[in-house]
Image 1 (cartoon, rainbow over the protein chains, first blue to last red):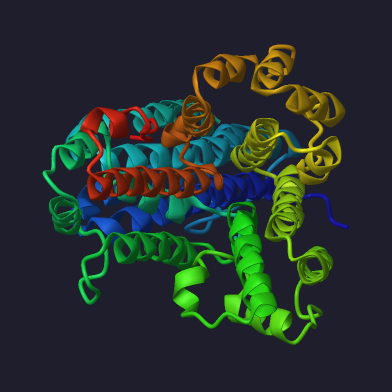
Image 2 (spheres, rainbow over the protein chains, first blue to last red):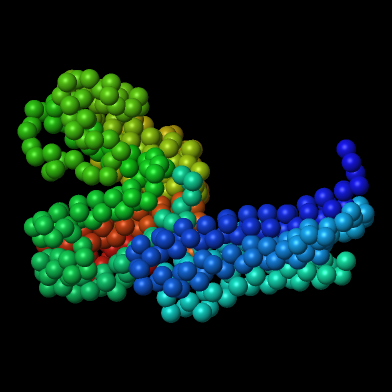
Amino acid sequence: MDMSNLGLLLALLGAVSAALFAGIGSAYGVGLAGRAGAGAITENPDLFSKVLILQLLPGTQGIYGLLVAFVTLVQTGLLGGGAETMDTATGLMYFVACLPIAIVGLISAIYQGQTSVAAINVVTKKPDQFGKAMLFPAMVETYAILALLISILAVFSL
Amino acid sequence: MSKDYTYAVARIRAKEMSLLGNAAIEQLLAARSCDEALRILADRGWGNPDEDLTADNMLAAETKKTWSLIGEMVKDMSVFDVFRITDDYHNLKAAVKLACTGTKVDASRVFVDGGTIDPEKMRLAAEQKDFSALPEEMRKAGEEARETLLHTGDGQLCDIILDRAGLTAMYQAGKKAENEVIREYAVLTAVAADIKIAVRCGRLGKSLDFIERALAPVEELDLAALSRAALAGVDSVAEYLTNTDYAPAAAALKESFTAFERWCDNLIIEHIKPQKVNPFTVGPLAAYILARKNEIKCVRMVLSGKQSGLPDEIIRERLREMYV
């Protein structure tokens, strides 16, 4: 096996991980909140807009993962051409740089989905408490943003 | 996905909004007659508009609505068997008695909705003396009850055989349940039923053999001690309870049997109240079913009280705590 492209392979693995795991987390979170949302609007269709916002909250991790993957692909030259051989250490650094959003994206989206479900339950009973209810899943977003920040800074600094 | 209740719980949250609270029950109590109370309930969407406005029709319709709603949302209804098994045994009791006495009555008057088995199947089994279409435990109990009733003509013996079998089946199903709410319900219901049996047997001066045959086996109570206490009377049953996990029941029992029954139902409602803030698991659905049962029981008390012309205070002291 030709090991000269191992660096690029590791960088690509990092980019793919960011999109893959954060995307899986978001799909799970949005799906979970969507099921609760469907239950809520079955009984009260007027809640649709409020419930939709709560359902979409866990979807951001997938976007963050996509962003980090895109930046990594551009930085390494894998996107837009010009990819050259990369030493293993640099490739490994790209891979590690992508890990925060890959891992935190996956886990935070799942938890955010569960918190969104709880918030949808609140809105179902007390629609006027939407503002307060939305804050709880929004809090989980903080950690996804922090992970995004570190991944982006790390990828740009390489 | 069959154990994912996210959609169902969110729907139940909305449905909980229409459960009757204490204020609604007070409004019913303030009604001048049973008909007025029925109209108040009909305005809240209770009953079936296509049927006559009677208490029986309305309460039967509400029970049907509850199970129909749960059936829409849950694929595997066996998770709720604990709540339905006693209705099956009630129907089996009715089927056996109808078959043995040769009575012909309208099925809707003796069978209840909500069980897991079609009452017609039970009626046929009892009439044809072939219980093979029923589950094993029910088959054994049905055959024994039928034989006992035919040979002794003692309806009470037939009752205790089927009541005990029903309670045992419900308790065993509850013990196997994954959900804590269902497990707790089964245990509390079986324990409360055994205590009620002991009290009633004590009052009627039943023999030790009769008491032991009537009590359903539960791990939480020492049945030998409870049977001996029942022989000695209600005070002895209360005394026995003070040494168990159900010590608070003793005080209620000393007050009155009605107070004890209310204590049992209120305890179940207290246990299920945390489900109002649980967004996952089958717990909130189980809690809703129990809340509806409690609500229907309370409405039945109010309507019966109004029909009998009982003073509001007498009705009020029998009413249970509401879920919402």
